[in-house]
Amino acid sequence: MLNLSLILEESAKRYPSKAAFICGDAVFTYEQINEAANKVANGLKAIGIQPGDKVAMTCPNLPQFPIIYYGILKLGAVVVPLNVLLKKEEIAYQLNDCDAKAYLCYSGTPEIPMGEMGYAAFNHSPQCGNFFTIMPKAGMSSSVAGIPTLDDLLKEQSPCFEMHQSNADDTCIIIYTSGTTGHPKGAELTHSNLFMNALVCTDLMAVEKEDRVLVALPLFHIFGMTCQLNTGVYNGCTLILLPRFEPQIAFDAMQKWKVTVFSGVPTMYWALLHHTNPDFDYDSVARNLRGCTSGGASLPLEVLRGFEKRFEVSIFEGYGMSEGSPVVTFNQVHSGRKPGSIGTPVWGVEVKLVDVDGKEVPIGEKGELLYRGHNVMKGYYNNPEETENILQGGWLHSGDIAMKDEDGFYYIVDRIKDMIIRGGMKVYPREVEEVMMRHEAVSLVAVVGVPHEQLGEEVKAFVVLKADKFVGEADLIAWTKENIGSYKYPRSVEFVKVLPMTATGKILKKELKRLEKAMAT
Image 1: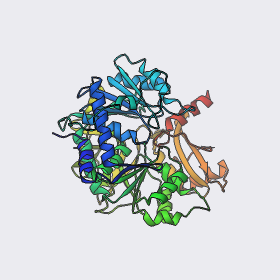
Image 2: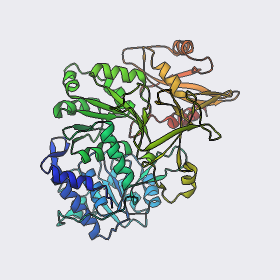
Image 3: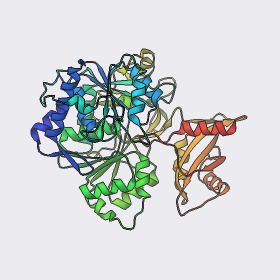
Image 4: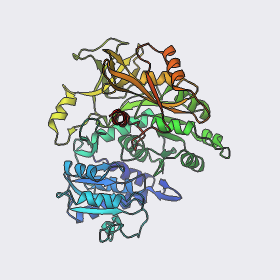
């Protein structure tokens, strides 16, 4: 038997009066969160939700997220966390695809009425029989007339609940991939997958119960869910929730709550590094921070070095994906690190690099990264064809190109899908981006392949300049040409104020390609 919600129950027994979650000025103890989760389990059971049923939720980083998340799990049902930026059609697709029996959706704001959009999607999901809005404060009525709220679901429910005895290999969550090709796919992760990854993260980051963790990563994403929510709750940490990431808001929270651990994606580190406020005491943040982790995408070395110098703290990079629960490799506190590397395989996970014929490549050569172990998903829900494509012979094929050095450290080169084939020559965008980031005027850059009549693809860079710097297109191209192979440098540069990003802070290269195609047309 293994039910992931056990980590909340155990911490509630050990640290009942300790602050579990802080949001704004509101503080919630482990006992309060556990009792509220029990009410969710009782409420869902009362409306007919059974073990194994799928319950979807759309919720930003608010205390309601862990309450609903663990409440669903206590019942033995399956959590389906949805991205808060999805539109009506996307929500409806995922509700239908996962066979959701209930949907809890945050009400949103007048500018972004998530509740109304979620309810419209619910109405296009005939198998989903229950809808509840999650209001930002208790006692508020639903933003959709006549629709019950989370408060209504919990009304008069008992704060006690006997946790369902799930099996370790039962599906715990279905988390949808970003859908870079076609529709998103629902990765089925088990109670064992997520529990083992929380244990691994505890060791990798040397997490202690005294840690105060700033949660800026969205909890509906596997990085925040595993490495912060589950790992933090398992260890009895205090988690400070940020519903929306902004550099100054993050710094204020770090200072106020004396944050010791921060995890983020590269664009968060970039935003924090380049944020300036003459009235803020940045040293107060540096005094408390003892460790930082980065994942979700490759962290540019210039950003890593700049952040570490400014805040006198080490950033430990790792590699993972939704299908891996997510952590696969990591620069581990106990075994050292190499800046620019994604580290070594975590405990219980094997990694190898193979060529197009499936043969392992020598040290120093590039190959697709494959892995197997306790972290690998069961498969894609109701999608045996895609499951068979990615899981071959027990190994999960990541679609990422990597290389390994003589010390066993791995380095991500690029995504196979992002690789540019220019006149038959392979160009890896990340390599070009790393070079361009070294220019004194460049703040952020994304390199993509654009159609070319003769060469097939040409290299183009989208560049965000530093606020106080300037460089012309021709000069930047010439500078890059001097620092990289002649077939790799960008033949065109477009200067932009911002780059399109996902809710988790990943740069949307497919959106850049779409815009480029539209302009060409």
